[in-house]
Length: 135
Image (cartoon, rainbow, N blue to C red; front, side):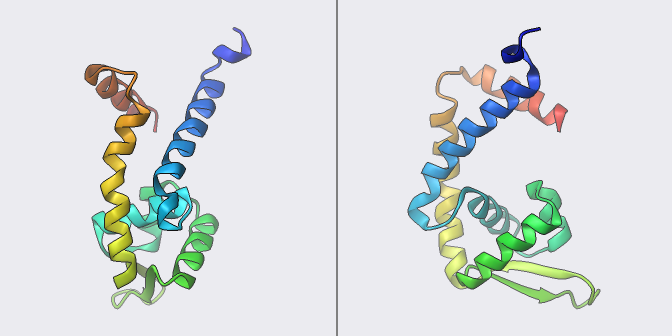
């Protein structure tokens, strides 16, 4: 097998292109691609535990903590202790974060369409199904 046919190479290259596309779609909101991903999940799922948010976004604890620290400094998110479990932290968008979170969510579908424009609808569905099976 040639290195450029290796699935690890192909997935990495595709992920870089996808991240670049997503970054361009959200840069007008003054956030990074990863910050936008976190805000998009929070906009959809509202208030969630930090551990659950890490699992949903596929971010490790240290990375998520850094992202949340920066979003909190930007007044985009609010963290508070879980009333049922004081060891746990709940995260939600602030008022400012809600507006930007909705705007981020609104560009997600068009951004996906631009990125996947070369594929038919059936190919897009197949690609999504295969990626879900991997991870």
